[in-house]
Amino acid sequence: MIQKPRLAATVILLRAAEPRGFEVFLTRRPEGMAFLGGMYCFPGGTLRTEDFSDAMLSRSAGMTPDQAQKIIGAEFAPRQALGLWIATIRELFEEAGILLAVNRMGERILANTGLASRLTEKHARLLGETLSFYSVLESEGLFCDLAALAHFSHWQTPAQVSMRFDTHFFLAALPANLTPLAASPEVAHSVWLTADAALRLFSRNELPMIFPTFASLRTLADFDSLASLLKEYRAPT
Image (cartoon, rainbow, N blue to C red; front, side, top):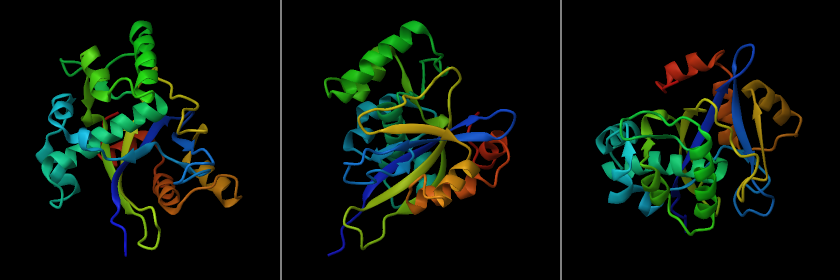
């Protein structure tokens, strides 16, 4: 019997490189993980029911459920479609400590010592399951910045694979003055690479990855600047 794939979301985090071009944030899964153990991939995970709860929708800004459904397809209920954007932001914070958020005025949060310290403490409590992602946002008066994401692609695990996922990929530019965590419970190691460099390492069997990751990097390699990539997919800088 073919297993129905679980809905999931993944984010390709990007930053400008010097003197030109851009780099991609890749994480390596711990060897012991059941899915993608030892592989390099992008931060992401499965969609949860709470991602499209009334509470989480009230803590989100920059896109409506109807707009999200229009982008990814009518087979999704509007609020479930928006939940994929919210799940992407949650997973990025869980795995890399990067929070894409705005305040009540719609202004993107700026890194400062006080906020950074509080988010570090709340990130630890989130991973320890003593604090919800909603509570992280609510306690700081923040909202998921859904406009910071641009839908990039859609991949589904083949039917013959026992653990299947139906995954939507998103693009996001790394906010200024923020640095992703080098490691976390679901990340053994992380690295910034240009798409071309990652593909070269893969060709030498030095950067193991599955095909959707390879195909994403191959598409990214066709762009010579972060601005041109974000313009193509209409992602904010």
